[in-house]
Length: 339
Image (tube, rainbow, N blue to C red; front, side, top):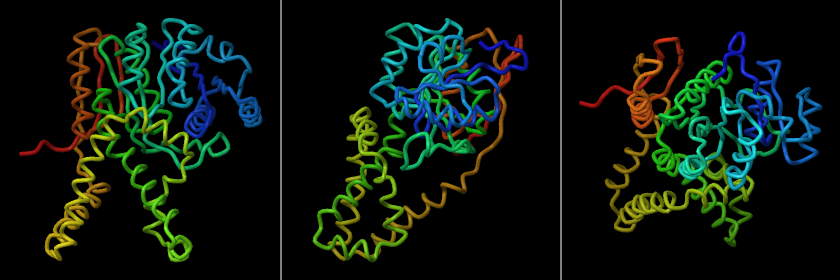
């Protein structure tokens, strides 16, 4: 969808907090033509102080853009999507960075925007917030989910190239519903657990003594509890069905641990923690195999999307996408097939 000389799209970022601001600053380093916009006048002023063009009017910020990132709060994304779509041309690619995907994907489909809107979610961030916390290297090596659809495959290909080439991200293609199930365990449940632990200590008569002895395990286990409360609540609320489903899974694991402890079963405790340790060590030690796949540029997009979604569901990711006149080539990595 981008045919400018050198393949460099004109990009806008709407919402310039931690994630949107980090996207904006990275783009500003890479491209001469990037604009930002935020509903907060002070944040717009901060963007201008960093040398970025940040108009006061949203329509001016996005009107001539080839790609627009939506990075506002989760509840605002549907309305912002409609507004940006109304102020941009049909060839403008729009994506978001929200932490849940099924809802916004369904909303886009209902409003006929699937052809140019690609739901997205960069798996990066900190407990800090605002443009002053943004860093342009935030996404280096990070997983960045994109949800391809047959109608929007050209927009998806455009974004893959941008995210890999500019942000050095690992693009993970996924079905929106699968994404929401996965992040419930990988991202949202850690917020539930951190909030539970920190809340239990806050309500305990031993609070000050605990804080006096708190070391790495407590700090690491409660780090995300430092995230702004509204942001965490919005995230959990938007994915509440999957979060509640996965809470039951975690509760079952906790029940097994406490039951083993209650009955004095040391062997069962050791076995459970060995299994947990193996999983933790697998995080940096995953074995991935490189591979390439080709599809006709104007061929069966359903088959292409099926391959992409399967890659992400299998724990793989894309490292590149090159679309020629006749063939589109994906480069990627995926775990070896079991068995």
